Image (cartoon, rainbow, N blue to C red):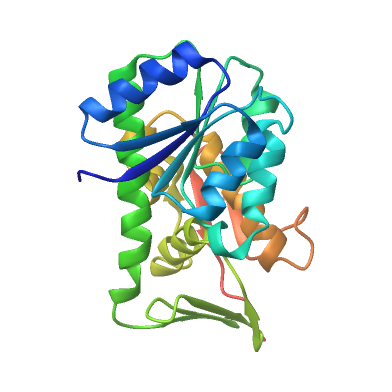
Length: 236
């Protein structure tokens, strides 16, 4: 893993410069922008392999920029890491809700940040590679085809982003059996996310919103409190 293109959107010029130099030392190609609008234009003009995005930006804040990216088909699956001084859990969950792949609070160790960048890139590459898995899976009225990266529920196609697809596919591989939260993290996100169960909680909620008749009373994706989750087959 070397030479990937990164875009940094950070309004602090000193931090942007330091971050650029640190990431370039790790072999990345880095372009930095200091406003949300400049960052959005740069990303749309030439989509990078990953975006590092500050939340507190002039003219277009980071959450709004994230929302714009996730609503634009050409870049909606672009790997994205939020950088922020905000430490409230609600901000973290909101960032993940909007589709961020990771959330790193300032101040941060540059070596740790580089490791998180590499972890997100590996997962993105793995998501792209999942399409070579051989056999489609059928779990009750739910069909999952990894080759086509498609999900059909009761005869109706369901469009899922790569991370949600990977999570569903992992649950479907052991349908009817409980998979622990830590095991889901290891399989879908990687060991770097050990001890961060909120990423599972958020994506499970998204899956339920897409697959459950009533996401608040799920019958398909079941929580086994204190253990993990299982996918239960449902009749058509």
